[in-house]
Amino acid sequence: MVKRIGVLGGTFDPIHIGHLRGAIEVAEQFALDQLRLLPNARPPHRGAPQVAAADRLAMVACAVADVPQLRVDDRELRRDTPSYSIETLESLRAELASDDQLFLLLGWDAFCGLPTWHRWEALLDHCHILVLQRPDADSEAPEALRDLLAARSVSDPQALQGPGGQIAFVWQTPLAVSATQIRAQLASGKSVRFLVPDAVLAYIHAHGLYRA
Image (tube, rainbow, N blue to C red; front, side, top):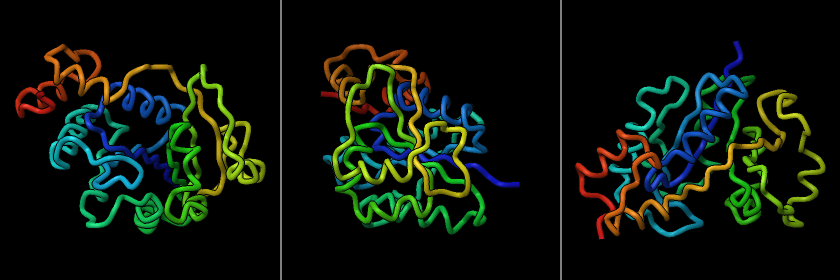
């Protein structure tokens, strides 16, 4: 049986309903055997996370504990180097059969930034890329990606075939939630209930995270 594995990386500082809703929608739409959430250790394209890796990992574990399709994967936290996606994909691919399908989930902004990523041209050697878009998105890909899209994109996400090599766009339920917003509300003493899972909120309070 061919396995279908999704990968969603992020700082998850903290993980919130936007991350989780997007993940579960993709897991169901593509009948994934599992979707792995990978907290970044040292993201190359953004500032350092506000809380420690161990806390971010624990919050993701709390968030997915009762969701069978979602798993937490700590491999990027076990590396001493920046969290390069190509190295993560190579590591994952080495654990899978050659015909297993691997799907890398990227938001639109992250996808547009691909030409700045380490060895970005090699990503599709290991996976399909699913670009998560909201219905209100109104953007064009940068010129550096237009040839790639012309050669590798498919109009029907369900038509992705083989272990990797193609790009598809997936519409998502729009949830205007951000970790930046959540951190600011916590720092000002406001409630973030229903923006993060209850188990994550309990962890944040128990460990005194994101206080001003």
